[in-house]
Amino acid sequence: MRPAAFPPISPVCLEAVKRAPSGLNAQTIADFMGRKYHTLMSELSSQPGHKLGADMLLPIASLTGSTAIMNFLARELGGVYVSIPSHVGRSDLVDALLACVKKFGEFVVEAGEGIAHGEIASDEYLRISKEGQEAMSAILKVMELVRVAHENGPRQDQPD
Image (tube, rainbow, N blue to C red):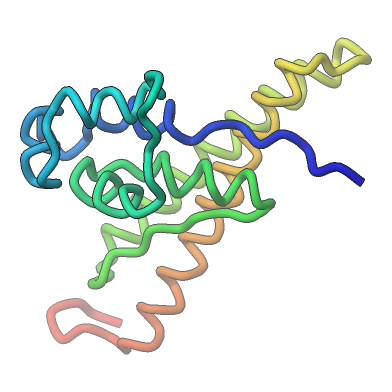
């Protein structure tokens, strides 16, 4: 049995570097990584003779502040990635619940449109799969935030 072809992760990394949520530009990210800008861009765009090394994933994810890389890996491996802040307050829980409802709604819309046609095309399947993974991730984040809040007990500055 031959393994299925795996989609490349370098385009996900390239997008994270080009549009880093951290606000760092690609030149600064390359500098922090100790790479020449052109070399990093060649590795990220899979130019001939250049490959993105696995050891570059963590620095790229960290410097860009993008969770896209972890979401991509988790989705391809049949899992979900959940980013949890170290301190959890009520506003974190409310924000997470709102994001959860939004993501679930987006999933229902995508799945509903695909099901309404009676046939799910490849591009629809990919969108439904992506929205479903994001909805599961949002639900798991709420669950984890609730666990962390429970373990930390009631805060002194907030009523029970």
